[in-house]
Amino acid sequence: MPEETGDLVRVFPALGRVFAPSPGAPEEPTDPRETRRRAIAALRHVLAGLAAAGPVVLAVDDLQWGDVDSARLLGELLAPPDP
Image (cartoon, rainbow, N blue to C red; front, side, top):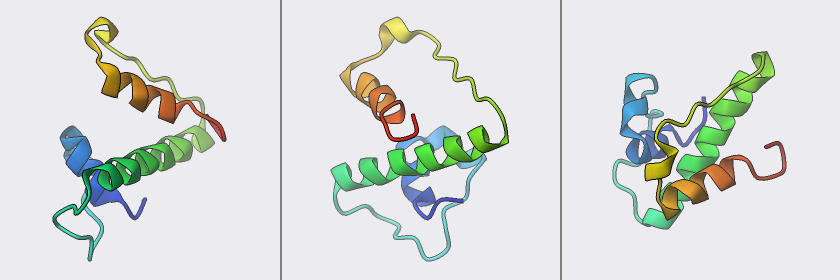
């Protein structure tokens, strides 16, 4: 489990059903950009762990409704190293 689980759940609340914040994790973020950076790092960590077990397929529903922030997220998830 990534250390940044609290940030992951803050940025992606639906993942709160799967992940509980790490013990001792700060409750309130101090810098939203840093929270987002840590959340994306945690999501990359989770996806890498799943990919180690086998192929991973991400289905993006309603991509046409995406915004700049969503495009940035996908770009960061697919960026080297280890896209």
